[in-house]
Length: 399
Image 1 (cartoon, helix red, strand yellow):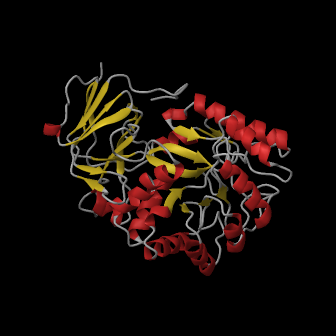
Image 2: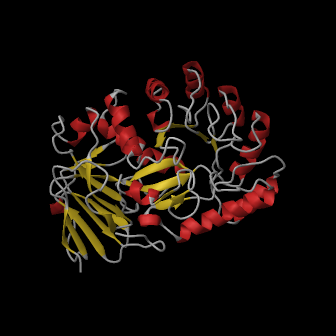
Image 3: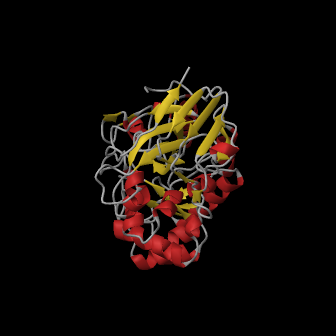
């Protein structure tokens, strides 16, 4: 589909019918009794059975051919720089590759890989504002990248956070990747950020890049950031006893990432389930990173947490969609009226041992993606990265 030069939205009416399974993204009702979705001007206006929906006057009509439809996946932890390029791996087109893995939205945890990243306060603010503006105006492959996440440095004062918020910045990069590493220092700045309406994430575990440090459970709890970033380490995890302490000791977001310790991730999921707080769990890849770029990272996390984490596949999909959308205050991630028309259509991979899509994911297989839609616009057909699906949707009309 090529690169999008700017934010675009569907014009007219999109109708998707003959949906075999509809995943809502909502933990309370992960499967909807519906086979049709209608969107107008990039937003969902109807969800239900075909006989109960107004499906007339469609500008674009898609026959799902019995495939499953889910909200577009959200990667809660990425490190973009500019455009669709990552200097960490010297790679172009990585965001478009994530699109082929079903990801329609990404959240920056800091543009830390920029060569020569400024660490003075003026430069920190300038980089964040520039990244926020750039990714607002440019969507690689159509993917929504919420960027401009400054890494806090010593010497920042409350007015700096007010300046950032006034300029449109809504995120902090991982606390601990800059010079602020002590819990008491981070706590003050996190509070200033929260007062300004800026959401914070804190690095957890061992250092991941030069300049970052070891952040233990006591520091995380003292800093009180909104998201416990990569609770399973990025890459090196805390002891499982400290992960339990974090899950039990606060009510903040529990972020599990692909580029972390798998045992620690599965354990954090179990702790959250035992606490009856699965709504706190969100998923990210923490990439690009030293271990590379993972276009299928979110799908792989869903399959891992379902197959080895004793979690129904439809619930695992919620962790990467509705949970993240609600915690990050996004207008996507759920199949309900008024939300952005961001969808991934998929089916069981050919020759999977699973009997259907959910069973195949529960057995650890990745689904095959047949189409990805963002703001009502088809951005990707049959994925170049996933295994081929048993069934793929068909565009019946596209004037």
